[in-house]
Length: 299
Image 1 (cartoon, helix red, strand yellow):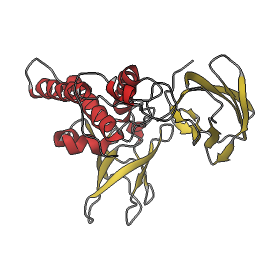
Image 2 (cartoon, helix red, strand yellow):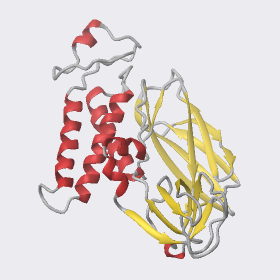
Image 3 (tube, rainbow, N blue to C red):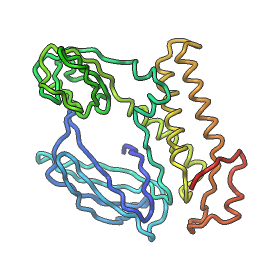
Image 4 (cartoon, rainbow, N blue to C red):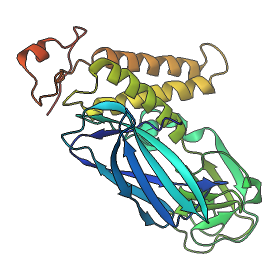
């Protein structure tokens, strides 16, 4: 079972969204139902999912009678073109959920050079629309184009910077926003860059594990600004390491720098937490926080 790591805050509604892809193409479901199991395999609730286009959504609230814990399971049953799919989505129930708010722009804000590397230069092979272009060289391309960015170099117009909002590998079609003034003709030059979302997600998973190992599941408050800083530095450290060709080149130095930044921030993470889950941080719980430093938090 794949570990799609999600936390939900007890007492607050949470919506699980799921889109099924085949060859990078989102599929449209005809029905969606779900069952929530606790970590002992007991059924907590049955849910009828809502469908909007290609997306199936399931909303669930962990009420006060549900204990905090790991590895609750939403088992989704989704029917697509007559085929029944079973998808398991594991999650934890906590007092304060940690969320991932980082995107590519957060990485670029800290390392501008990142925007200029790993760019793909191409030429459209078929006429598109004002918001799509086609390049047969992209057929069956497995790069993470969705969420990336690029630039169209259309003769007679200013270069158009765009975000990639869709990618169909079977038709080699890129969907982008904002739209161009005219349909994109064949022979148009473009440049684009895949998203770093996979690296961001991997960094978040790492940060999540480190933070939960320190504060447990009962922490009543966690500053998500700090989480975002940790994710950015972890992701940049990994990306720069992958770009490095030898020790002490600029990418190696950057990787070490962001790794040190991560360690410095994490070593100062000393938030007090509610160990007994009564919703109050007592004096004893406040003084039992780790002794490796403090941080200034605005509540």
